[in-house]
Length: 292
DNA sequence: TCCCAGGTGTTAC
DNA sequence: GTAACACATGGG
Image 1 (tube, chains in turn brown, cyan, blue):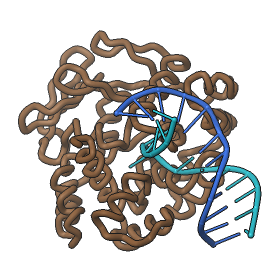
Image 2 (cartoon, rainbow, N blue to C red):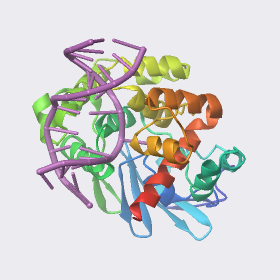
Image 3 (tube, rainbow, N blue to C red):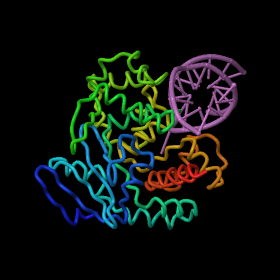
Image 4 (cartoon, rainbow, N blue to C red):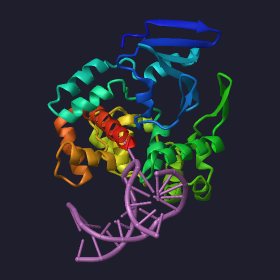
C-alpha cells in the first residue's frame, strides 16, 4: 500500500487511514498469527512489545490510531508496504480451489511483522495448546512481568524483556499454567538475555534459520515454521498443525501423513507464497469449524 | 470421562 | 530413519 491516504494528528495521537480492501482488522488479528489483542469499541486494541494501537474498519477504510511516535512502527507491523492485491490474485489463480476460496474469504488478512522475542515465545507456548489458553497464558505473563502502561485511558502491560524473564525459575512459569513448556520458556529467555541475537538471523536463508531454531529446546519443525513466517517473514514457510493437516487431507486430498513432508511438499509447490496461503487455509478451516 | 489443542522430546525398533 | 508414547493444562 502506498502510504495512508489521510492522517489526522490530535495532540500526541495520530490516526492513519488506509483502503480496507486488503486490510481487514478482524481477519488480520483473529487468523491465529497473533495473540495479544482484545475487542475495544468498534475494533480492537492490539499490543506488541510495549506499544498499543486502536484498530478498526470503518466502511471501506481501515484505521490505525496510535501515538504519533509509533506510526512508523505500526505501519511496518501491519506490513503496509506489501502489495496484497497481487498476493490474493496469485492465490485465486493458484489452480487449487480451496486456496482460491480461502483467499477470497481471507483477502483482508495481512501477515504482521511481529517482534522476534515475543513471537518466538508465543509460539513456543502454543505447542499442543489451544488459542484461548495461549492468549490467557501470554496475558498472565505480561501482567506479572511486564510494565504497566496506559493507552486511551486503558491499562495494559508490556511484553516482558528477556532479562526480566531470565530471572524467574521454572516453578514461576509453571504457575502461569505453562505445564511442561515452562522449562522451554525459561531457557529461551535465558538464551536471549545472555546475548543470543535474534536479529542476526534475519539475513539467513529459510532452511538455515529453521535448523538453528530447531536446535533450541522446545522448538520443533512446526514452531520453527511459525517463527520463521511470523517473525522473520520467510514466506517460503508452511507451518503444519492439526488444522492444516485436516485441510491437507480433506481439501487438498493429500496422502502424506508426516507433517514435515507435508510442509516441504507445499513449499516446493507454492514457493514464497506458501506462507500466505497457509494462513488463508488455517483461518478458513478454523472459522467453518466454529460454526458447527 | 474422554478428546482435543497452531507439537516436541525421548525411547525403542 | 520413523513409530509410539509421555508430557501439563483447561475447554468442550
